[in-house]
Image (cartoon, rainbow, N blue to C red; front, side, top):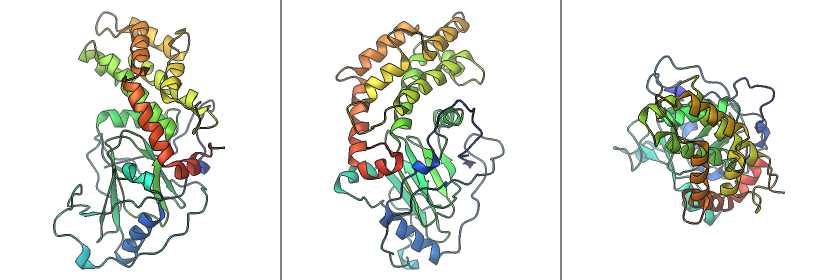
Length: 335
C-alpha cells in the first residue's frame, strides 16, 4: 500500500498549521486498541503494492509535540473468543473486528459513526475508513506510520496538493481508508475545518472542469498542466482565506462565504482568477474549460440556499460544533 508522508519539505512562503495543534484522541476507543496491542504479537510494515502503483515510499514518523492525552480507563484484554470467524459489518478479512469509536459527548455520535474502525486482534493493527464528506486529521503523542489502504485518484491528488503547500500532516479524505500497523497509546482523529473546506473547493472546481470534456478532466490531473495548476491554486486560495479566520466557531467562519472570497469571484484578479485564465488559454482549442466568469456564477449559485456549498457548509459547521472539544484542542482557534 502507499504510505502517507506527513512532513515533506515546503516552500518557506507557504503557510501551514503547526504540529502542536494536534489534539488528543478519543480516549476510550484507544484504550481498547492499546489493550489489543498488548495481547497481540505486534504488526509489521504492511503490504506493498496497490494504491497509486509503483514502489511504495518508506513511511515517515508523525507526531510532533501535542498536549498530553486525556486520562482513560483501560479495557480488559481481548481474548481469542472475541475474534470473529467472519468479518463484521464494514470490515474485511485483514481487519475483521469492528471497533466503534467512543464519543466524548452525545452530539459526536452521528459523526463518529461515519468513521469505520476495524482491528486485527492477532497483529494489533487497525484500519480506519472515512465515510463522511469531511477531512479528518490524525493525532498522536508518539511517532506513528500511517499507510494508505484504499483511495481513488482524486484523493491521491488531494494529498499531493496538500503536500505542495497546505497542511501536510496525516489525514484521511472522504472515502479514504488508512491502516496502522501498531497504533500508539494515544492515537485518534478529528475534523480539520480548513482541509474540509479545501476538499469542498477542490470537488467544485474539478466538476467545473469536467463539464466540457473528459480531456479537460485528464488535463486537471496531468502534472505540469495549466488546468491542474488552476485547480490547485483555486483550492489553496480558499484554504488560505479560511486559515486566517482566528475563531473557527464564529460567524466569520462561514465555509460558503470563505469559498467565494478565496475564489475571488468579485474581481478575478487573484491567484485563482489568473491561473484559471491561463488554463483557459492553454486548452482553448483541444479541451476547453468554462470561463472564470462561468465558474464564478456557478459558485454564487452553489452558495445560495439549497445550493451545493450551502448544504456542505451547514454540514461542516454542524460537525465542528458537535465535536467542538476535540476540534478546539486540535486547532487552538476557539478563543
